[in-house]
Length: 552
Image 1 (tube, one colour):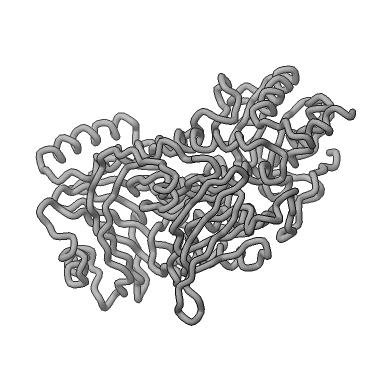
Image 2 (tube, rainbow, N blue to C red):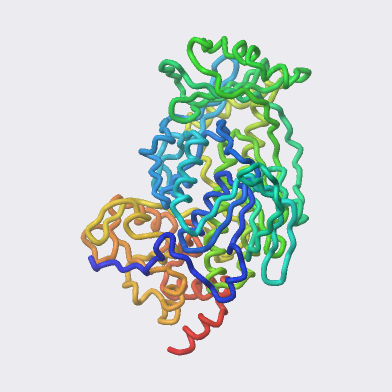
C-alpha cells in the first residue's frame, strides 16, 4: 500500500483576506441563528471566512423542536467533531418505524434500523436545544465567526459587489440602535416567515397540505420502555405519533380533529387527558412543552437573488412524517458552504451559486412529496376511508413479505454533476478503510472534499497533468482504493467500495465536498472526459486558475 497524501487544509480559525475584502464587515452575513445558520457559519468559519450571524431573539429558544436526523446528517456532524454514536445530546434506537391501524395491524414498515450507505446508522434521535448549544460552542471557539443576538434585520440592499444588511440591535443597557452590516453575501436561514426571502422577492409555492397537530414533549421521571420505539397510530379517532425525543425524552403528537380548538387542546389538562391511554401521568413525567403546529408543504421556486440566498425553513417546509425537515436545511448549509468557500477564495465564479437552488429544490421536493404521501395515510379522520386504507395497505404489506421500505432514494436536482450519468447526483457511500497506519471511516482517515476515487490504476494515471493541477487547486485528491492485499492507497476493509463499484459497473467515481456523486466512469478516458465537463461547470475561469494552467 502506497502512502496517501492529501492537500493541506487551512487551520480552523485562520482568517483569509481576499483582495478588496477590507471594506466588508463580513464575507457572509447569516440571518437566523438556528441549526441551519449556525452550521453554515461553522463550515465557512473553519475555512477562515469571516461570518456574522444575526438572531433577532435575545435568548435562544430552549424548547424541543426537531427530534430526529438521518445518517447523512451524522456524517455532516462528524466533520465538526460531533460523534452521533457517543454524544450526550444524541440517542440511538435501532428499530423499524411502524405504521399500525387502530386494531394494531401493521400497515407499513420503514427501515430505520439498518446501517446506511453513509457509514452511520439510518436514524438518530436528539435534543435540539442541546445539539444547538454544541454547535454554538464550536462557533464560539472560531475567531472568524461572530454571533449577534437581539439583532433584527429590517432592510436589505443589493450592491454591485456586496449586499447591505440593515437592522436594529439591542444594547447592553436595553436601548435599540440602528446598525448596518456590509457583506459579500447574505443568507436567510430565518425560518418560515423569512425576512430575507420576502426582501429578495422569492415566493413560496404552496401545496395545500395543512393539518394542525398537538406536539407534547415529556421528560420521564422514571424509565419508560416502548416497543416499537417509534411508530404511527393510524386511528381515525385520533391519529397519533409516538417517538423518542432524544436522550431522556419522549414525544407524542396528536392530530387536531375537525371542530376542535387548538388552543384548548394544547392546555396541560388536555395534554394529560390525551396521555392517559398510554399510562403516562404527571407522576411519571414532566410536560416540557405542549404546542399546536400546522404541518405544511411549501418550497420556494428560486433560492437566490443576486448576492442574497435562502436556506432551511426559509426555502422549504414539509410535514414531519419522514423526519427530514431539519435534515433538509442542514444539507442546504453544506451545499452552500463549499460553493461560497470557492467563490470567496476566488477559485470559482459567482455563477456557481446558480446550481445551489436547483439541486437542493429537486432533492427537497422528493422528501416533501414523500412526507405528504405519509401524511395522507395517517391524517384520515373518516372511519370508512380509514377502513379502505387499512384493507389496501395490509394487502400491500403482505405482498411485500414484510420487507421494510427504504427511504434513502433521493437524488439532487439538475446542477453540478455529469448529466446523463445514471448515478451522478446520488449520495456516495462510506465504509471503513485503512490508510497510513489508521483504520476508520473514510472521511476521518482519508479526508473530505473533492475526491476522485478509483481502482485498477495509479492515481497519477487517472487524470491528465492539468486536471491534477485543477483538482489540487480545488483542494481535492485522487485515491486508489482496493481490497486487502492489493496495491492501493486505501484498503477497503469492509468491501463497501468494491461492492459499490461492482453494483454500479464502474471503476471510478468523483465525489463532491457535500458527499454527492459528481460523475462515474468505467474507463480512465471516460473519467477524464467527465472531469473536464465538471471543471467547466464549476466556472474555474479565474485569473489564478488561468495562470496555473497556462504556465505549465
